[in-house]
Length: 271
Image: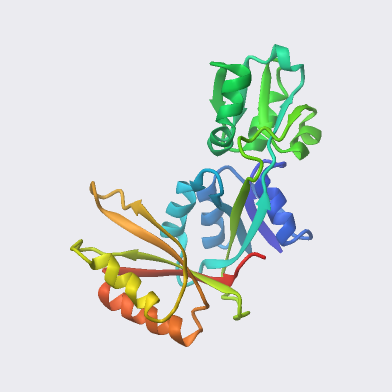
């Protein structure tokens, strides 16, 4: 099996991928959209991307990728949740650090730590935490916020561990593939709803179709369509599989009331 993921080696995406399948051949991509595109183009058998962090919320680029690359052939087939423990890595020592590099989400998760320990130090954003570690290996004046595994891969020292602002820090990853998994009884279904014509009670009517059938919604989030100011899509995760009768009934009614309904996939929820 070939799995696409955010690279280079040493990312938290790699940790999630190995938790999902530790025997697959890994193909590394520069950004989340490239991973989703690789699945859609059948360059890989599946792809794994971060979708949500417990501290910073949803990953906007991943939500956009779901909108553009999910189709009848490509869908969400699974999810993985892993703890995120950021470390401060450098070739030199902590007193010589002049630049801190990391992915924007990692920097956001560690912003209070950076402020408390380094004040207004130069901060540079990178495409991934592993890319930050790779770049920091070029100079003793650079440090990366990345995983402990990255230190060994790029010849860096771990000068501080657990530098995220909250110790309880988790990221949810989704697996993109091409075959809908069979129901397990502990499933989730993800959809996108576009109301098209906004009016009082429109969203309430949509949500009522799930409530009336006792279907629990585990997440609902608005995301701009990027076509006009105030124009939004709604990303919804619900409990149940698309093969379940009550889920089918709810989605059929939602499709009649919404401008657009896009089913992203049904899959077993992470334990």
